[in-house]
Amino acid sequence: MSKLVYLDHAATSYPKPPTVMAAVSDCMKYCGGNPGRGSHPLAMGAASEIYSCREMAAEMFGAEPDRVIFTLNTTHALNLAIKGLAGRGKQGSGGFHVLCSDMEHNAVYRPLYRLAVEGIIDLEVFDTFPAAPVRTEDLILRSLTSRIRPDTRMVVCSHASNICSAILPIRRIGELCRRRGIHLVVDAAQSAGVYELDVDSMGITALCLPGHKGLMGPQGTGMLILGKGAALDTLMEGGNGVDSLRGEMSEDAPERYEAGTLQTPAIAGLRAGLEFVESAGIEAIREHERRLGAKLRDGLLEIPKVTVYAPHREGGVVLFSVEGYTSEEVGRILDGEGICVRAGFHCSALGHNTLQTPADGAVRGSLGWSSRERDVEGMLRVVRKL
Ligand code: PMP
Image 1: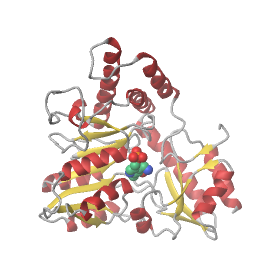
Image 2 (image 1 turned 135 degrees about the vertical axis):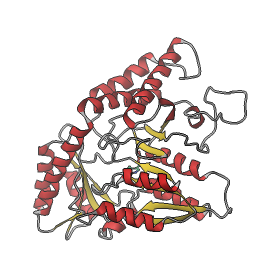
Image 3 (image 1 turned 135 degrees about the horizontal axis):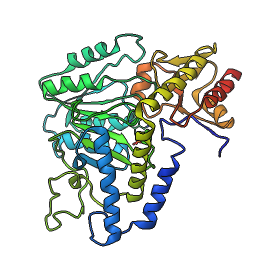
Image 4 (image 1 turned 30 degrees about the vertical axis):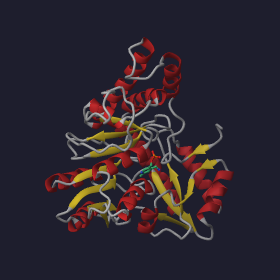
């Protein structure tokens, strides 16, 4: 295993810090019962693990602890936010207008697509110009503003793309949405732990993020962090240890949105992941990924048969194709050399269409905090041989 070069951090971070693994194991040893459902010492231990993670996440993302809702992953958080804000049971009621960007992952696009097909929303896409070398922020804002209508109720967009290193100006989008009374749902799958995010000051209604990528936590963790006053319809109903004699879910977050037993050991690991990120420093992590991303991008650009998509964007996600090979072939050759990348469409038909990648997609190398110079050099050596 140690010979493998892991350049698939956009999928999930690996290896997890030893403190994360220890926290999961300790929680399984010392916590029992069901957090929030019992007053015996084992259940109280579980509840305190959950609460301390909620507190740390609230501090990191500019919210209060009761606005931090634990989910299984980003996709779960996005479904809860999008469908919860759209309201359920509105089928055939005429709908309202929703905007998403042309770089979205299917975790955003598919829930929106379904709502559109059901007639609940009218979905429109705005442009992000990821391949443009300059002034993209102004172009993005102009494209978004020009599509806002009186019935626009929600903007949903990623902060950082998962197929290249394009970034959306979330603070400016948030200001615009706040001025126009529009909900902003942000997919921070690629930015949480790498870029600063502050729910309240950025005008975000619902911040959706993974615990298992930049925050270094175990798979099976994600969070939805609500803006002040944001209220959603529920996606799932069930027991949560609160108001047990009533048929309806109680109104109060976070319990309203957390039906059933939480993944306590994974959340304990996530808390250790947050501590790890805090002590490494978000800025240092971002700079590390930026520097190695530049090395990989520059190295690939020097190889004659290679096309790099959105080559002006700085960051740790690098997308490329090699003339004469399908993306699957390049991926398989790299796999064979022990270099873990991902080929194909990366769950983002919208993004690949925007970047005009080949019909069979492209290859993504994605760097993380644990990536080293020699990992990039190893990958470049293999691609050069093609
Ligand atoms: N959005 C983006 C931009 C992503 O990159 C991903 C993961 N590839 C997701 C959403 C979905 O994340 P998760 O696997 O945590 O549900």
